[in-house]
Image (cartoon, rainbow, N blue to C red; front, top):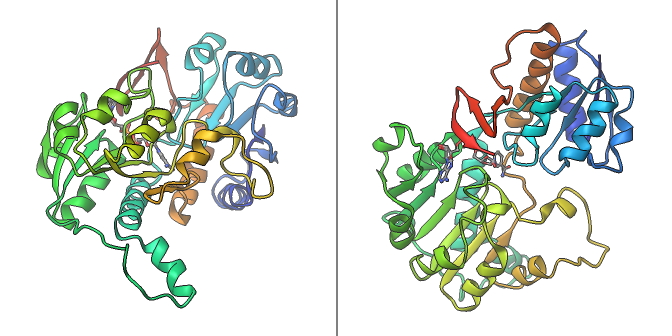
Length: 347
Ligand code: NAI
């Protein structure tokens, strides 16, 4: 069995090699490719039996067709989100697709809180000032989180982990999730999206990107947010219509924006473009606001999460090879994803 790993960074090699050697020594040989999977790079998978991909690899109908024609039978996502995979085509082609649903919900939730506190207390600006010998605190005024209302959109694994942290801060918690389980009840109140937007000082997005949630934050929903509220997205960039967010920042309606993910991140994130002219005018405009903080999709990036990702990814491959039922396989029926650990998701 040969596994072709796309978008491979040094840390992917380190953790996959380590877990392969320690826990799955006979499972497969691995060929690493630094490039993302796309129509152009798909020939690199020739001769392999399975591919392993990350969040910005392309897995549309054409790429899946080419992979299948080239002999690939299994697709291993080393991430939780699967919005970038055409699962309907995968189902038609009989491809096995599995993800890593919960490698470290706390890692992402903690990162969302880190972004909020950085933006709120302006520690990024303080750091730069102090390094230059400027100890003036004018302009660094923040808000005490204790007593603030936090609205969480999507109270699955990460949303609940965020709820536990905000609860510890002494925040009042609201959540919107059409498929919520009972767990959130111990931290706060489930409400509709309108009420969440109207009452929250901070809105944190933790729902998946689906046909129903694309551009959930748009001109109309931004207009319903509490004036001066902060918006945080550590989920998927497509949840936010970026052009509308720029207008809301310009009109001062939105008080702050923290992004770990961005709609058009595929062309940029995970690579060094510091010596180039970046053509994305929306991203460049966003970066000019003093109350916008952008990171390059690193919410997942902890040692614990990377170990878990490598273990579950190779475990999924092991299930596939041995014909065992895999708890992480993404099985679709018609155009709906059905799996025990999630509510049905319309694709
Ligand atoms: P999960 O599946 O445990 O939870 C998602 C929750 O969203 C579920 O409770 C679901 O009912 C809810 N939901 C579905 N449709 C909704 C809607 N229309 N409105 C509100 N809520 C809705 O997923 P998990 O593990 O909590 O991950 C959430 C997302 O975080 C992933 O889909 C992924 O896109 C993103 N993520 C980001 C990472 C990063 O590094 N920044 C790392 C890992 C995940």
